[in-house]
Image 1: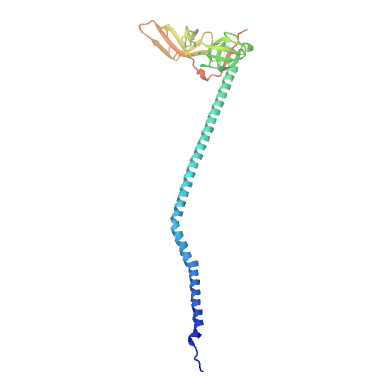
Image 2: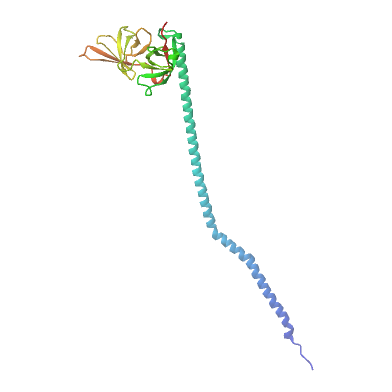
Amino acid sequence: MIFKKQTKNSKSPIAVLFFFFLIAIFFIGRNYIRGSIFVKYAAEASLFAARPVFVLKNKITGALDGAFSYFKFKKDLSDLNQKLSEENLNLKVENYRVKVLENKNKQLLKILNGEDGGYSARQIYAAEIIFKPPIADFDSFIINGGLKNGFKKGMKAVFERGVILGEIEDVYNKTSKVKLYSAYGNKISVYFENSLFSAMASGRGGENFEIILPKNSEVAEGENIFYSGTNFALGKAEKIIKNESEPFQKIYFRYPINLSEIYFVGIIAEQQ
């Protein structure tokens, strides 16, 4: 018996292999697409979508950093200004202290070395003022020197040997109280530099004096007024008031120095 060759059966394994080959290619290609092109484009799309968020985040972060930097700069500047202000104040205080010390030294040297007023240097003792008004009574001050230094009641107090201020009213062991001649109600004898006539000056308080003279007395504004018997000045005639209906004239004057700037006075010792 003759059998015919089965062509269909002989081609079947090849078809099956080809089918599996195609399936393999499909899966490999799908995995390739998923692993490369798809993932690539998906990542790029995600980055593109997220880019505004990153940009906004960077802007916010930058703004916050800028704000923090600005406020930190302002605080640092404020701290620097405060430090400079404190240093400037300290310099002013130190400068004032140096000037005060310089003035004290000058006053002390003038008191110790000067010879105005008709008194020799060895007859005057320098005393530091430790209390002034309002701590001390008005028109008075407390000096550093008393019985231990040989100070006595009635001793004259002068400034730089050119101006007489007052005299010791109370004396204690280490301190003394000097009452100014300008104290209210106090009376002292004075004379005028040009006219050379004498008069009685009354203290008006607050370092001011008043003199009452006959209206025909020739007194000029600016004329120097001295303590009687000495070359110590008390001031200058600053204001003269005359009234035609009154027979007298009034002359007002005050000390020629600022007593708030005095640190030392000279105490005139009693002559032996």
